[in-house]
Image (cartoon, rainbow, N blue to C red):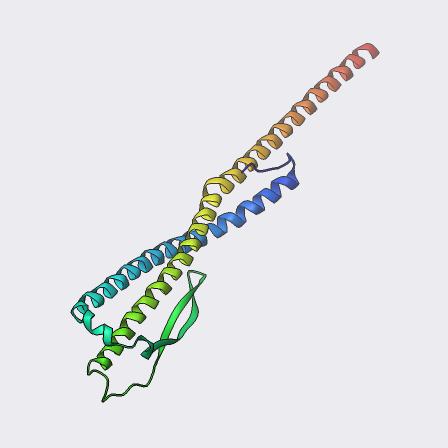
Length: 205
C-alpha cells in the first residue's frame, strides 16, 4: 500500500496520528488472532472427537442391523434444536444449548422389547449428527474470522505501519533539508550583505 502524503507539517501530523492508532491497536489484534487460532484448533479437535464417537456408536450396534427392519423410523423426530450465541475473542459464535426429541406413541405390549433401547440409541446418534453439523458450522465461522484477523494483522504489521514510518521519515528529512537550505541561504545573504556594506564603507572613506 503506497501511503499518499505531502511534504508539509499538516501531512506529517496526520500520518503520525494514523501510525499511533495502528500501533496502539496492534497488540489487541495480535491477541485476538492468537485466541481465534487456539479456538479453531480446539473446535477442529472437537469435530474429530464427535465423528469418532458417532462411528464408535454405529459400529457398536452393527450386530443389531437386521432388527432395524422391524423399527418404525417415524417413532422419533427432532422437535427443536436450541441455539444461542456467545463471544469468542470478540467474535459472535453459535452455541448449541440442546436438542429436543419427540417420540410418537407405540404399544409397549405389541412392540419388540428392544424398541425403548432403539429409541435411546437413535437419540444418541441423531444428537451426535446434529452436534457434528453444528460444530462444523461454528468451525467455518471461526476460521473465517481468524483469516480476516490474520489479514488485518499482516496489513498493519507488514504494510501500513512500515509505510507510515517510511513516509514520516521522508517528510522529516525533507523538512530538515529545507530548513538547512533556508539557513544556508540566510547565511549567504547575510555574508553578501555584510560584504556590500563593507565595500560601501570603503567607498565612502
